[in-house]
Image 1 (tube, rainbow, N blue to C red):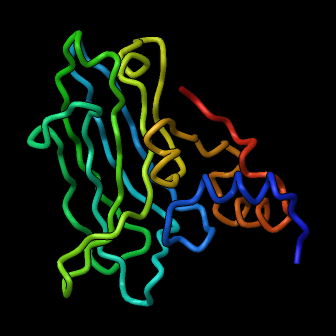
Image 2: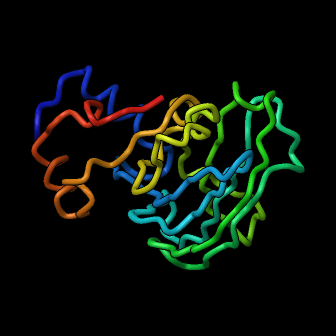
Length: 184
C-alpha cells in the first residue's frame, strides 16, 4: 500500500470519473477546424471500467455548452460489450461568433439495456475559441475526467504514458496524477 498525501488523493478523485474504480479511462480524439466548422473524430477508448460486473455498452455524446440546444448534440453509435471500444466516427459542428465563449463537451456513457438508464463514465471539454485556432493541434489520447472537472477542462495523456502498462506503473509508484499536462 502506498501512502499518498491528502492532496494527491483529492487530485486523483477529481481526475477519475465515477464508476471507474480509480483507473484512468481514456478517449482518443482528433479535432480540426475547417473554416467555421469543427471536424471531430471520435476514434476509440481504452480502460473503460464500470462499477457493475456486467459488460460495458458505451457511446459518446458531443455538444457545446452552456446554452446548447439538445438537438444540436451528436451521439456516436453504441459499441456493445467492450471495455476498449473502437468508434471511428466523425462529427461536424458549425461554429458561429456566439459559440466562441462555449466549450465542446464530450461525455462517455455506459448504456444499461435492462434499466434503460445510462451511467456517465467520464467527460472532458475544450474551449471552442482554442479549437478554432488554426495554429493549435488537438489529437491523441485524453483522460476521461469526473463530471465537475471534465466540464471545465481536458487533460491530455502525456506521450510517454500512451502505453497503458506505463500508465499503470506510473500510478502504482504513487506519483501525483494531477501534475499531468492540463490545457484550457
